[in-house]
Image (cartoon, rainbow, N blue to C red; front, side, top):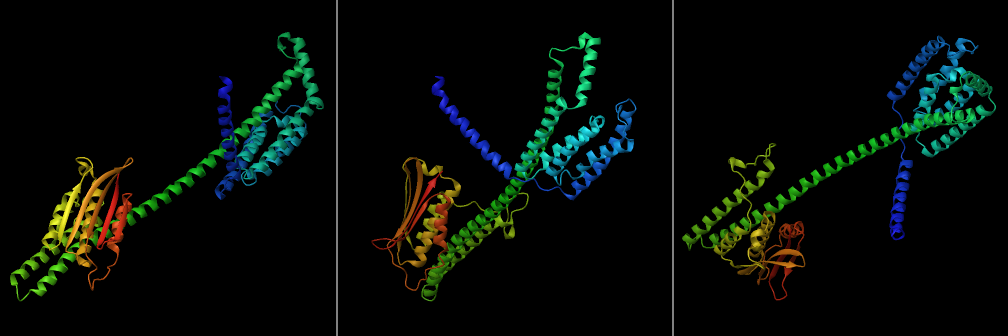
Length: 464
């Protein structure tokens, strides 16, 4: 069982290691931005403050004998301590250089003045130099090389202190004297082994802590920049989405306006022509045509007011109003198709309308946006028959069905006419609007002449 399960685990481990390598490469390629002027100014001020604190701490420690055995002048002791602290003023501007310089100073000054090297400020200054080098180095490969040199140098320094330094000999002599006077001072391990292990642990904690804190700071800066970059991307995407939403709404309003105006203007044009021809001979027919023109124009104005109310919506999200305080009317849907067909019949176009459902109540589940698109498609199709065709009749069919797991709804308008003499082809916005409505619902549009004569507009919408 274990042997069978091992290969997937190995593959998972290799995949994880590969992702880690990719992430490491991305991290290596990232460079931390250079410090600002304000940060550099604070570094200089902070270094001066630390030098002052170090001087006070040095004099305080002298009072209880911490500098015993050091016979060099006091001013020289303060100078050596200040020299160890001074590179910190440039720790963020030249992090790797300060790391190397501080390492050299730490080694040289510790050997030159051992009593001073145990001062907290002296040790803390070197810790800060290592931390700053890891946290601010922009060239991570150069940093790793510098850390390798520093750690190697410190290891050699510890080795020399155990083998060559007189300080170790005096330490061992004092230790043997203490153990002879007090047998309980002896440990489990020999003195030299105990001291070596203790020194290794102290130095590992010292260097390891500085490196870990530096890496944490560097990664935090990296994450902050990534988050800022992502925030900028989200802001740009939000602006793009808002712009796209405005464009889509403008296109929707343009389609609606075209369909409304085209439909009513077609009706007005037909009845105006009829009224002109029978103006003298049949006054009653002329009056009926003018009444139809009046009603159609009024309906066109009301629908345009309702539609343009979208553009006048208030900031509080209240429904917009048109001129005269008219509120937006409900958008037409499948229920209004019968009235649309009846209107065209009344205007002289013989329209046959049929509904075919693959299952009972299939048309009742059609969403409002899809129903509006179907209504506008039929409206534009019939308006085009009136304007551009010699046909006196048209057939509108609304059917539902399923292909695989996808439900669809199809509307088809056909006629048997020919292009009307003297009729222009129009702007093409109506047919473009039909295709856009089909694409909006994931459907397709088939628009063009029929093989046996006439014109067909067939649109299949996908129901979600």
